[in-house]
Image (tube, rainbow, N blue to C red; front, side, top):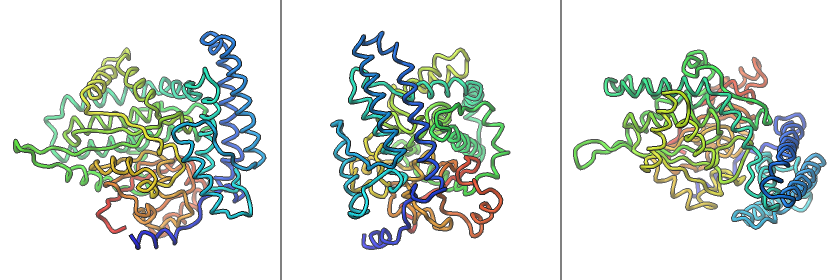
Length: 452
C-alpha cells in the first residue's frame, strides 16, 4: 500500500486546455462547443415531437432546455467557473464533491474553470451538464439527445454488420472442426475487429457521420502494421488459463467483462467477439458494462444495447437475423448481461475506483478478464496525464487491477504509454497527429499478478 501511495506522488500533471494549441485546448475551444450546438439543434428539431407527445408543456420544456444549454455553451466559450450541479440525481453529490477536490488542488488562486482544469474532468462535466439540462425540464427528461446520430451510424454500417454476422455464422457452423491453433487465430481476428471497430466514434467527429462501410475482416491484414503494442497473446493466455476443471471432468471457462465504448458498428463488433468467446468455450459468461445516461455522443446505454440486439434480430438478412436470435437467447439465459453504474459517467481516474466505487471494483474482481474498449476508458485507466511514452502500462494504471485487463483502443487523444524506446519519437517525426487521428491502435494487457 505504501508503495502505491509513493507511486501516486510521482505522477505527471493532467492533460489540460491550459496549454494553448494542445489537443485538449483545441477540443475544449472547438469540438465541445460544436457538440453543444448540435445538441441544441437536435432538441429544436424535435419541437413538433415534444408537442405531439406532451402538448404545450413539451414546447415550453424544449425552450427552457435550449436556454440552459445556450448558457452552458457561453460558460464554456468564455472560460467561466465550473458550477455545482443542482438536479438531485444519485451522482449529484459525488460530482459536487469532485469539484471541491479540484478546487483544493488549484488552491484559492483561481476558480475551477473550463480551460484551466483537467481536460478529462471538463469533458465529462460538459456531458453531465447536458444531462442536467434535460433532467431539470420535464416532461422531456428521458430524451436521449444523441439517439438519432447513434441510430444513423448503425444503419449506415449495415454492409459491414452483414459481412461480420455472415463470417460469424460460417465460423459457428465449423466450430467443432477447429484445432486449438485455428481457434486462437479466430480469436486474434475477432479481437482485432473489435479493436478497429473503435474508430467509429461520434464524439471525435463532433457527431458527424462516422460509420463502417468496408468488410472489417478483409481489412485486418492491412491494418496490422498500425497496432503499436499488441499483447493479444497475453489476452489469449489469460482466457485459456481461466478454464477450471469441473466435477464432471470437463473444463469450465471463466467470466469475461467488456467495458463498452461506442454504440453502432463498434457495439456489433463487441457482440460478435462475445458470441465467439461463449460459443468457442472461452467464456461461460460475458458481462457488458455501459453508461447509465447518454454520454460522449455515441457511448452505449442500456437502450442502445437492447435496441441493437432487436435490430439485428429483425434484420432482413439470414445470417444477421440468426446472430440476433443467438444474442437474444444469451441475454434471456443470463449468459450475457448488461450492467451500468454511476462511476462510468464520473470523471475519476480508475485508480480511484476501489475507494470511490468499492461495489463496482468488487464486481470487476469477479471477472477472469476485463476488456476496456476505446479512448475514454484508456484515458481513465492512465489518468489522462502527460506520461512519457515509455512508461509501462502497468505503472500508468497506478495500482488499478481488479482482474487481468486489456485495453483495446484506437488512438484519439494525446496520451500513449508502453511504447518501445524511440517508437514515439519516430512517430512524432513521421506523423505529428499519430496520437489523435484514430489511425493507430494498441492492445495492451495488464495482470494484477505482474509487477506494478
